[in-house]
Amino acid sequence: MLTSSVAMLIISISLNLPASGRRDVHITVNDSSTALKIIKPDTFTVYRMFPVLPKSMPYDEFKYLPIRITNEDKLWSLALPGYIHFETYDSKNGFLIAAFRLIGYGLMGYAIYAGVPGSVTDISLSKVRTNLLVLGVGFGMNFAGWVYDIVHGEYRLREKQLRILYKYRRPFDEKGLGDDTGNTAE
Image (cartoon, rainbow, N blue to C red; front, side, top):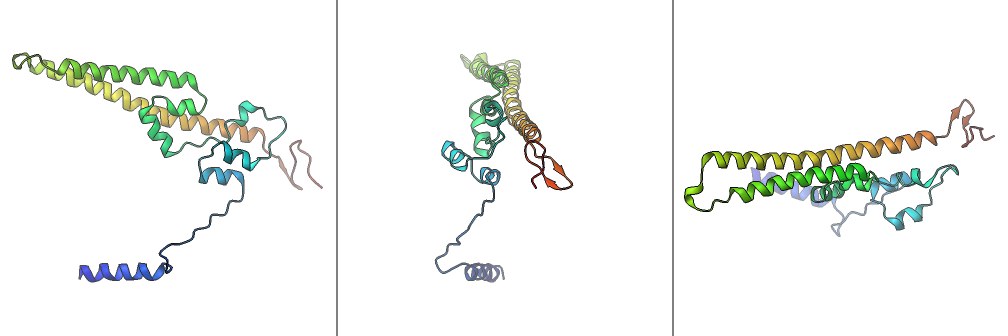
């Protein structure tokens, strides 16, 4: 019974695929913000899009707009303390997270180093408990620093981007969308 169900599933899937076994997927991009969500932008991608910006927008605000936090960035922040905050131009919090996590690494290293006995007679239950506690505290500090880096970094970036978008929004009135000065196009 099970093998016949699996065989029917394989046959139905293979009938839905083209003869070459590939499906051609076309992604239509309507604007630059959609394109930035599809791929992580690099310098080439950002400069090929030429976004339309208000004349009054300084570079310090513009540099936040193309930043997107991906799963790859989250994995890099696991290995590099404070990575997300450095990517979002918040070096003060990035250095604080790095220091916090380095203290955690130090505690873990000390627990491992102090946990190695010189001989069999040096093993005591209280020493093992203390070393496990220090190791757990060090691991907990690293995990908490990593989670804070991701959650706070994404929150801070999203808030900054929303503030910039709200500041440079085009006003809407009864006649339609206006231009950057608030005047409607006629």
